[in-house]
Image 1 (cartoon, one colour):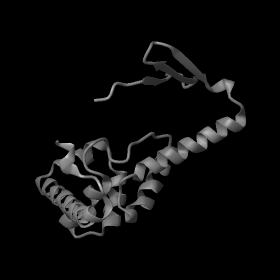
Image 2 (cartoon, rainbow, N blue to C red):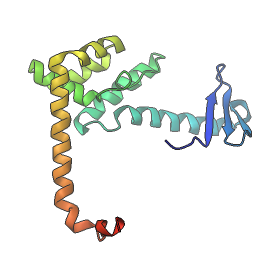
Image 3 (cartoon, helix red, strand yellow):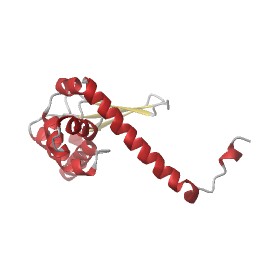
Length: 165
């Protein structure tokens, strides 16, 4: 694992962020020191990042629903995570639930986005869902491997055998 170069701590009173560098030097970023237009730009950047992170790595068909649920949570004052922390992505869980129940994936995405973390964990732990998620991951890995193998000869001039000499 790479050594951390900088640690960042958001102050409990939400007045700024403290950066501590590898050599112990610190930098205090105070919100009240920033002009209002910069604060607005920072807020917009953060909103874009938060909503964008919520659907990162998800299937394109699920992105809008996930983004909407994330924005709804923020409007309610909830700083929630997209999938309840760790485990499969919402799209994988939704696909598994759709396969298990015969429902549309979009409906399952919307349902899962409304669930609390404990409910998501219990669904993820269900043997049928666990097996379906493993199957979905295998299908994706197989498709990725086939795509990589198809392009392997076309895209690289690197002699891998020479690396081992």
